[in-house]
Image 1 (cartoon, one colour):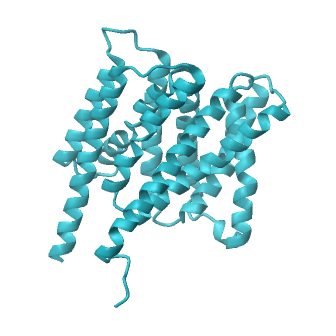
Image 2 (tube, helix red, strand yellow; image 1 turned 30 degrees about the horizontal axis):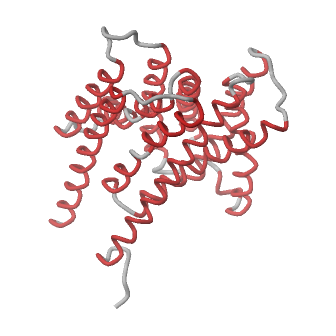
Image 3 (cartoon, one colour; image 1 turned 180 degrees about the horizontal axis):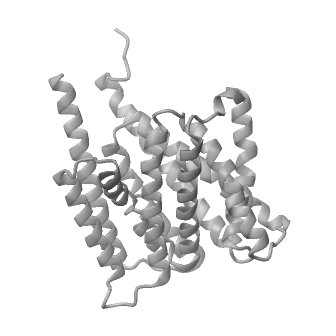
Length: 303
């Protein structure tokens, strides 16, 4: 008998492959962080983001040429534009955070994004506020308070910017969920590159001093353009191969990896409070995903 994707014999193999893809995504995010740090020493945040699209658009055009240019048409152009304005805001906040905060600090606060996605989906899509989602929200808020420790330490502008960026990313995810009902994922990525180019390029030219890159910047410019796509592709591939309960714990490797990169390249330390807060956020997210996955499996078994 042929072994199908649903066979128990293939599940461990799929889980291992999914874990490798998640690690690939984490490595992409880390390389992107380093590229942002290096480039923002001489360029504005808007110019850095514009090069992300300048590098990404030719790559996506090659994909469109291979797939067929007719297939890149979006059925919901208005939603694509709205979603990319919100997503660009989240990216800009993330870039600012990377320039102001230790990399591990940015990564820990970035883990709150699933929490904000759930809140926005409940408020605007009418999704049910199930008990495990409320629990994840409370755990996430507790984790944020542990990391920021308001009243004990001054809450920095960088931390607030990263948190706001996570909220924008959450809203972007909700809008993307709506888009995926009619547009393919690669269509969404294509329009992301096209729409976000003027959003970054115009401010970079007219509001800031444009700095022409040097040859030494070329590897970082290429890295920021490529990793922006590989990170999302790796995560999408991982979730195709295995349940979120497999992928999310592996994704937590981003925190120690960010701490290691920050320590090796920028002499940054890892605060015990950041680690404790990240564990709270992770625990809430993982429990919520585990409950969602368990409920889905039980529903399928009853059917």
